[in-house]
Length: 456
Image (cartoon, rainbow, N blue to C red; front, side):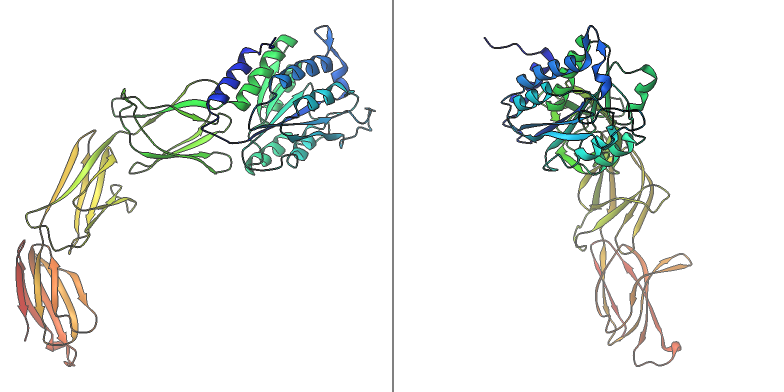
């Protein structure tokens, strides 16, 4: 007869099997087991060590044969008898190296352990870094303990260092009958679970293993200005908050029902979400609830800007428009002309790279609406100077003149694409050695037509 599995572990196995074809990522679980002298104490009518060994052994049997799962066992406090003032803080040992199919080997090793020593949690975590044979895949520690650090070291600092180096994800800690005043000391180490009796220990153990194995479902709601998740088709990236490592890269999609579709991702990582809107959006320190369907919501209401040119559309090669945050020099995006692009709702300053440039302030983008920006088509000036020289083309704006093209060297004769308006050409021949020999000639540019500007 097949032995029934616990409901939480059964859920983990079912999800793991359903994802087997989708993901071949290896999960390595290292059990770090407390065999200090205090584990000899009675707890619910049975010694703590016996309860922990019995229940962990049962779970190990149920884990046998899983693809892409490797297990190992490190034990502390089992080699040196505890003597007050003479505790052995190096009493930590990798008893069963991490490998596939060694579930029953770990179970047998646990049954032979005699608790007698101290509690070097920090050192055991630190040594665990060398127990994992690869940084690829998912490296997970499950610490089972009934006491706190006894060697004046800092388990929190060790845990943070291991996570920042991507050696392990945030550890799980199962606390067996730990005094209430010490429970908070584990919160900085990892995901802490407090158990008060053997029934709760069994339940928590199954939950922790399920979380270690499971992928978890999540949907990302990109909300419009009314709070409805209608925005979509945007690339986004999920990074590990601790290490900054890129974990997932997707393009947001709505399913056939018009709702955000569902993803399966690792629930043990705290994420930063980077959404590629214009401008970009970020949401930091996202924590998922393993084994459940999670929803991540971001306000990303969008409208669009369309860039058009009236009438004749020739003249400019790959014309660009710089979109900036209003009143700043911060560039949001550089948009090609004759395109439509989406932006977060709000106001923007535009610099259209015509000659001369066109500046538009406080251009408003509204929810699901298209803001049309239309500029007049350019004309052209056919300039003939008769030789090399210096000078430039100036836009006449009342009493002001703005240089839009400068001649630095050589013969500037040729065709110049310009926006409609009044201009003046200022030129001094290379051979003219006095400033007074500078020549000015005004001309007009109309959309779609050419003006001949001849100096000789």
